[in-house]
Image 1 (cartoon, rainbow over the protein chains, first blue to last red):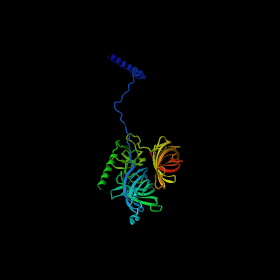
Image 2 (cartoon, each protein chain N blue to C red):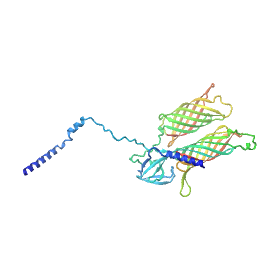
Image 3 (cartoon, rainbow over the protein chains, first blue to last red):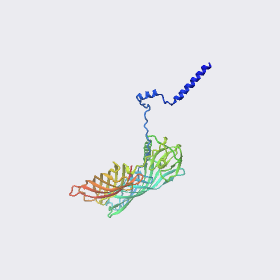
Image 4 (spheres, rainbow over the protein chains, first blue to last red):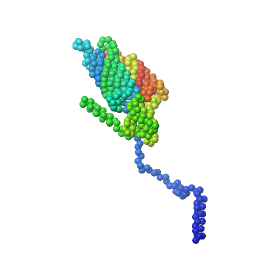
Length: 223
Length: 244
């Protein structure tokens, strides 16, 4: 019995010894041979490819709106005015702005005193203008309404040029303005503007520069 | 009053329509020690909230160089572009803040300016599309204010920028054709109130800041008339423009 147990132990030691000598061999050879012979199979993914969209950040640099107010047409009295505006904000300081506005002139003092005299025809009394302006936010900041409410606003200056059509004639006009943009919300702004349209005219007999000052209030939307 | 209310409601509806973007909102992780949120989109507005490192903020929209963001607890404020560019996506990639368009390789220009056409004041506006970095197609509309007439002109042309990589000033040359329409202010009426014309131009362009640039041009026109001689007026102008 002892000798049989000894034989089993001896056989076990010999086998383990053989396997120790054999450890230098790598991988079972036949399996490798099978893989090289077999056609390579392409694994098709079962999961549909997801289309990844980079989220887009909407830029709200454009502003459009309308305004109304009063325009003092030199020699022709003060009259209601309405118009539309569009702006593009280039930086936090600079913006480009365009205006189109219209008013209808009243009568001159001469026409009031002498009703038979007509300085400008009825169709020529429309004062229509367009302007292309460069604006600068001079004083940006906050204004406070009561204790718990603050609105962003900016006092800005604008300078530009354009066309004034008055008395059926188009004139080159410069304009200078100061305004305040009060943001009621981040997308809705209220404007208060004072702007002077200056152009040369000979309508009242001699050539002179006339100043036509408007004071307006308006709303605009950022998008 | 009722009209004003209706207008406000309409504006609100328009705003809601645009506010709900189709794509998911951009969410960014604060990677720097803190992220300052200002009360307005400008350098002087006070800081109203500070998001800490690893907080996730949602980007709502931008205005010029500022981004409106929402912090996890609902606080909203404006973050400077350079600060937001240092945040990360949830995957660890840099925040996809679009870069400024390169001035040398930009595609679009839109601008307006002042000039003098044949001793007359000129108001001009233009749009320009870059076919290559140095060759552009430009479309110009302008109005010249004379003492006896007004001219409305439109031209289409090609414009070559010789060294587009010169940032502050780079010479250009162009050629094109167009039309003019004359509206008389005082007699005598013009013999022709519309003409075809062609031009050559020399000029320059340059970068000012961010997406803002200047452009200047001298043009020599040939206005084709039905008389013995064509007219050959000069023009110069300076434009300020935005590029994309």
